[in-house]
Length: 115
Length: 113
Image 1: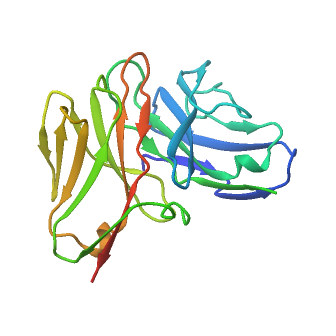
Image 2: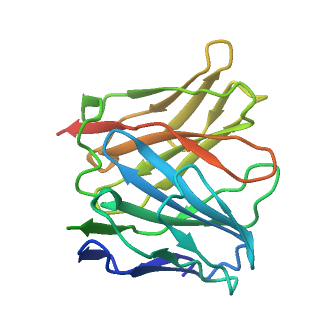
């Protein structure tokens, strides 16, 4: 089954404790992206990756890191989480990035709470 | 997610009625517009898209209308069913060198049996 998977689905942590949220897709997609979703604000892009070893900032990158060492995986790293990073996080992928629209497929989400 | 529906405008309809969900977009240069459906506890799911050179596109039970003059997008759902209850987001594709999507804040559709 073609899908985007995220782990963990739920996480409660404390301020300053480094964490990683994994994202994996099995569709051989070039483009991957991370969003956060907050009430009243919709989805906002954190980072995106056009292909392996190619990443760039989205609209709200502060406090986050990403890496793209393999095509299928795009982990989101919070080196020192803070309470304002409490949010619902979604990973998405599409066949490619670049000019023109490509449908993005979303993972099931990761609910993160930072105390 | 469980808190996605908070603080959202809500459209309440009776089962079997037609629903119209509206969205205003921001960038006149966006080349694609997309509607997503998000059910509780799940990620956004693609419903339908429309290219900027079109003003109407129909799918199964859904129609998207695009009015570029006033930068307005609407999603019409025919014969709304309880399974249509969800948060609906419009998104615009900014185009350019990336596949960037800008999302609206969403509308909660509540279908009453």
